[in-house]
Amino acid sequence: MPINYCGNIYIMSVNGRWKHTESNDWNTPKRVWDKVIPFMDREKTYWLPFYNDGYAGKYLTEKGFKVIHKNEDFFNTMYDDVVVVDNPPYKVKGL
Image (cartoon, rainbow, N blue to C red; front, side, top):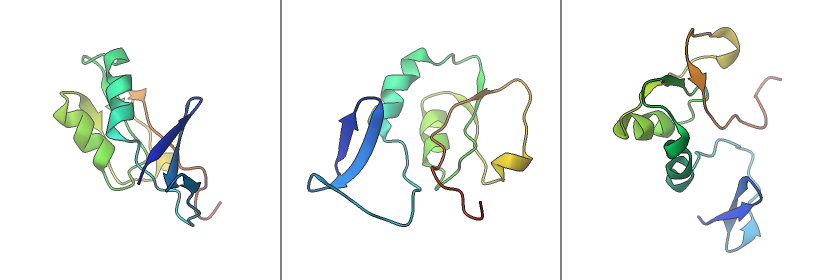
């Protein structure tokens, strides 16, 4: 599935057309993380609160970052001394 760049937003598309889906659980692509990584401090702990399938946490851990990435409720969870980095869903079920 190609990803088109539009300003600072990456848009999922199929054959250059919008793909309508009920799910908005799209992972941030590896190539986007690779552009963000040079600006991240490896001494800090990063909280990626929107789990989806766990890909982002696995990828950043592989790159040597300290990451908190659990399948838990963002709205009822808090961590101290972390940097929040993530791609939140645009629609939350139940809200």
